[in-house]
Image 1 (tube, helix red, strand yellow):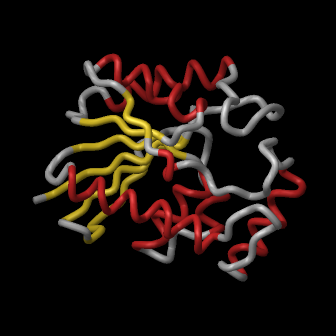
Image 2 (tube, rainbow, N blue to C red):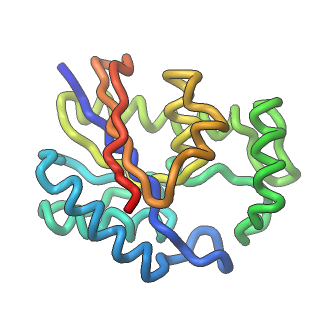
Length: 190
């Protein structure tokens, strides 16, 4: 029995503010509608999200369109990079990601490592695959945690892959039980 997981990386969000509560920019809001349009004929059964506002807002229109509520799973949140709730600027984040992929157990004080984040998120993903077996599930997510979940099944989903993704982005993962069979990118950058 095939299960389909649609990883939907959140749309564009403001560069400043609390990491948990940052919303979407105008571009992000427009892209959220495009995501709903792309996925409307996929036969989605369930819509799940990280607890972060930008992820919920990215998939909320789709959920409304198909008559579902967004189910929030705390452990699908983005990797915690530090003990602060503010977004880490790209000039600091890129070297941090590089170091994290060279040493998966590396973490800043108060943050979590790639290993810890992957373990947390994969536990939830495996539960989703069991609970929603044979269904089509959208997961509103973030770049780092999405890449770590996908990389758990296929090591080609690594830092280079993360750098190749966009905001937003959509990857349809096909599973046979707990085994990843195929991944297709559904988002086209306009």
